Amino acid sequence: MIQKSKKLFYLVEGLNSFAVVYYTNYIFFFMKHEFGFGDFENLLLAALNGFVYAIGSWQGGKFAQKFGNVKSIAIGICGIITALLFGLLFNKLPVQLFAYIVYTFSVCMIWPALEAIVSDESDGCTLSTMVGVYNVTWAGASAIAYFVTGYLLETLGMKSIYWLPVLIHACQLGVILPLAVRARKKEKVRIIKVVEITTKDHAPPLYAKRFLHMAWVANPFSYIAISTMLPLIPSISHKLGLSTTLAGITCSIWMFARLITFVTLWKWNGWHYRFRWLAGSFVTLAAGYTGMLLAENVMQLIAAQMLFGVSTGVIYYSSLYYSMHGSEEKGKHGGLHEAMIGCGLFTGPAFGAVCIFLVPSTQNSGLPVSALLITGLCAIGWMGRFRVKSKK
Image 1 (cartoon, one colour):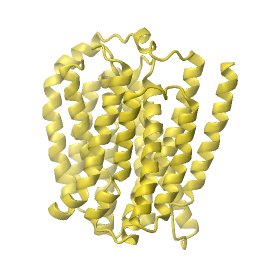
Image 2: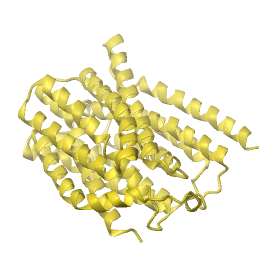
Image 3: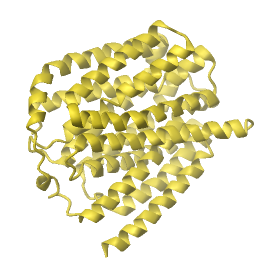
Image 4: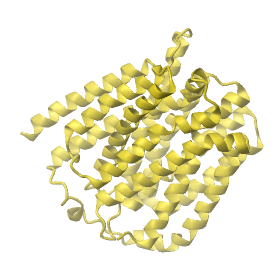
């Protein structure tokens, strides 16, 4: 049974996920609308986000581990609200970029801390259950947010990417502040029983460590694909003749596929420490990503998104689970998990932007990233071969 206080942290997580998607995924539409950003500029913006996210998550995890998870979350929420208010009040490009940087760094104070809190098994629930609920919560909120944001933007206006998240994050503060005193006292005496954590998966230490490293390699490549795809959604939507509302509905399908994958992996543990699941997800990742870029109609786009959503779900779940499994420094490992995401968030868009710069006439700026995904698949295959040898 999940404790009541932990359920409130899941509520904070869901609110955070919805608000973050509302702003970060549609900032590209805003920049296109307000400042005339094309694919090149939006990819550079996404690369900036990834660069800050990688550094911020690493530091955010260390901060949460040292000073407390709840304090880290509260500081992050305050930073987000401040950044969004600056973006709302000053519609100048330098201010928007500065607000985006502060916003991203503030988000990095929240996710590692939340992952550490929900992965604490002091209430008797298993790690598999806690990570499962965590993944379903943020993925469900993200999918709903992307699904409705197109309609909300057309109804409330582009400025709503600022003031609506501010209201949501203010609600977060209202939820988390009453928990601050209790949570801080609890964290001072918190003891994580590693023996209880490791009873479900009998993986030798070297074996488990190898899977952790493979997942940390795979997850950045997953986010290379995601972070390159999102800035290109406006162009894909334009090519297929989709309005902002229809783009939000149609292009959210991969998020719902990822959500269903999370539920499946939560309820079924047979994928734990199985190399073929990680390797197979990489194959479908490359296929789904390329299919979304080359889709000539909505049905092809939907089919490609199904593959894309399943593969990103398996890879993300693997990375988070292996990061937390048997780890005492959950805040630090949560930060490293998010930092790996940041590496992918930077590399994908940066590579796409470089390709546009070198070959301005290219018709599909995201397609060269497919080659990066194949490189990642080769790396995972090599590491898996090494893993088999080390197990013998």
